[in-house]
Length: 212
Image 1 (tube, helix red, strand yellow):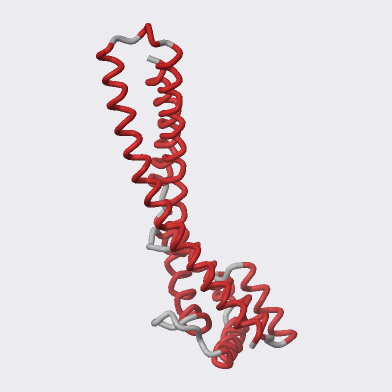
Image 2 (cartoon, rainbow, N blue to C red; image 1 turned 90 degrees about the vertical axis):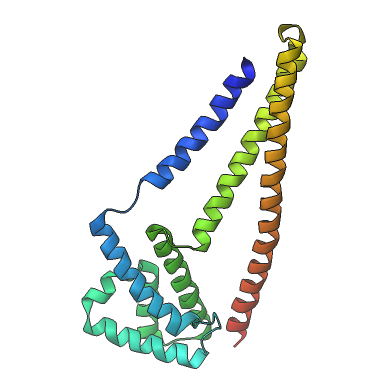
């Protein structure tokens, strides 16, 4: 039947993409490098961006730690190889021009961003992994809505082709899909509220750093 074709065409590519996303992991050699990056960035995060209680590091202390980092970079070329390109550029700029409050804020945000990417590569819990999961939920929701619409359209256009039993079975399928869609929508709605709160907190944090 048409709705089965619709179901296959819509969901199979989605599940293939989810499967491939889970299947391809870092090779052992690459993972060792990224784990070393994680150790370095975790220390940078705790000494420059936020402490273990997720409280902002004092601006003067953060600047002092950045100066120490720059000195370590000058001593060790190996350390430079583990730093992201944008963070490395910021540090070179600070070495030549000093550390302003706006530059400090940029460095802190860059460290957070790089650390998120590293956590995601290693499969650790992080906002990026969380965001991708929400995107998968959204893709599934859109697919389910598309399937339901096409099933209803198919039934209305070809009523004579379906027996009463088939119509009843399709109704059950649509009902289940609708319930699943509502559940996924509820998850997305709740997380959307959380994300908005997080964005507001992040904006306030950046604004305060720039004003200081």
